[in-house]
Length: 341
Image (cartoon, rainbow, N blue to C red; front, side, top):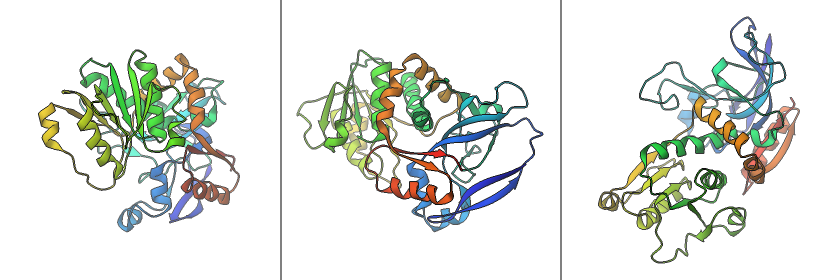
């Protein structure tokens, strides 16, 4: 069959290409229906990844957050029309000690390999997870981002000590919102505090126990553990505050992506005996856990709908361009493309 792929060929320019793919294989064929734009997609779209990276990775279809409907499954495990979330990470080997999302050999869609901006996506059987029939598909579109939080918290649970009376989350954006939400569900008896800098963003965090402005942290405040979701240069300032306020032998989960090296006050990390855990992306198990949590706590999906920003019906390439341009100027929420091309 001829599959249309919508690739970024240069900054801010998409073009249609055509791939001839056989349906005589063990791949599940999924028709994307809802895609979500990520900051990593925007770095390619705007060309801010740098000339060398752009030269190596383009042309490439963007987006790694997406859901769709099964149109063909040669094994019969999925009915035609089943709603599924697509997993962008594609491992080519296994390691008993290293997760699939940390193997250097793994392929990741929209990062050197075509993402979900296609008419049809051909996926291995283990690269999809079925969604509840009544799932809000606009929310489901950014399940990949949610799975990153689920992955990070599972790593935290394995490595941190079990005094979990207080959590602090630095970063009042989408990832900070998701992380606070899941902390409140997974640790209902713990106090969760969001540390941010923007009032209208902090106003969305109605479910946390406390909101604190980063330039007005009370003297003497302390927390057992912290999650850094600031990213960029803000990661450095967030880490400074976390190290100042975290209790000895606490654990710091690092989730914010910084394009440049940042300074860390290692003297106090050593003095307090702190543990820093880096987490990136997620694997199939994390997606399965995320969907299980959706089912167990359906109100989570309602809360997640709060971070839906703009929604675009995409019927042609220009609509996708409009969605990416609008997302650049959006100050809150996820931009979702309803993929109707």
